Length: 147
Image (cartoon, rainbow, N blue to C red; front, side, top):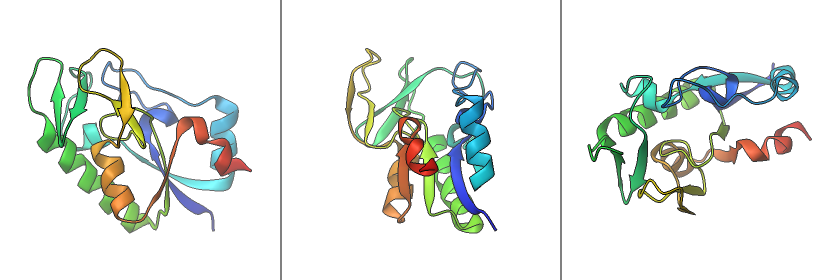
């Protein structure tokens, strides 16, 4: 049986990105991942109740705020909890996540100023998954899963 791999749904071509699009990995990469893993897609923002498309959001401290200043921390936390439940239920030990995202960013996220500045840190979901022992990789690290 293939090892389960939790994956940000936008990386698999699901149109759940804030602007209604996706961040699909190249087709050859997707095919290689599907050959090796049982892919388990999650979109914590959508699953937490936010619409697609939606106003862009960035993490500031322990909260998440959209560009209009609205505090959207609650749906981000709800989505993170659902992603963790999914990971546990499916036996995922590794997650391939969208870099710099306020939910899935692992190790580096936008700074909350909406200026494109990146700072060290985790998105809400990445932080929860890491605290619960999952290994986190961003999309630029996908080759580590295919070596």
